[in-house]
Image (cartoon, rainbow, N blue to C red; front, side, top):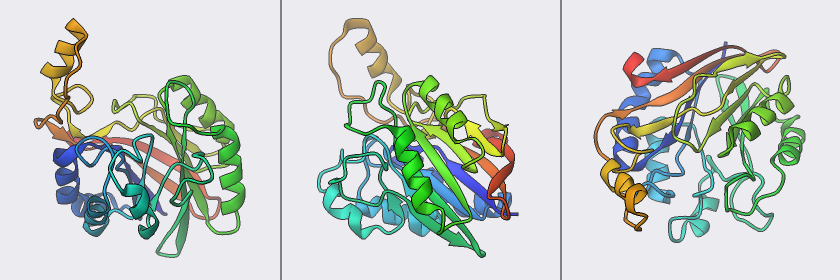
Length: 261
């Protein structure tokens, strides 16, 4: 039975180093068929570069998804087209470069993968994530055995609504963006694994991966500061989903954090 390992937002050098060190052994330990990771914060905590993407892929990640920080690193808009296993959010404007979805095949199992951005509290211009998800499911129907959907959204209500909207049509709808793992992982009726946020792969002695003292100081006085990526208590957060190949739907879901592995 295929198993999908999804790793939540990789944050900065501490997060990506830990993932690179652990992903091969984690894959073997969990028996994962396909490994997906959100890496939109892998470069200095904001964005990604071609070099970093290639390092993560070489370490054993099969597919990289991105979010609202997709264009934060200079020149990445000119690099993304060369990365065949990296996709940008599907509901960005049509003229944005990059792939709207991926199809990853392992052991005869073909998994379609795409991300949709939320439209509540995110500044990046995007179209309706619900209609974009419909369009991507239609485009992938003949090319894969199951579809994994990442909901890169700020509002929990928007994520939950998308989960119910896609219940029975996708094997999983997993949220990212907030960097805080939620405890609501479950199987929705119809065989769709759902979690509002998979959490982050990065330093947890922090505020969302950033130096906590600097963030606290800004909350206290309102002054703008640099928020460097923190260093301590680096953990992996994510989830493992068992998929029935015949139906393309989920039959089991486990929330993961490195302290429990």
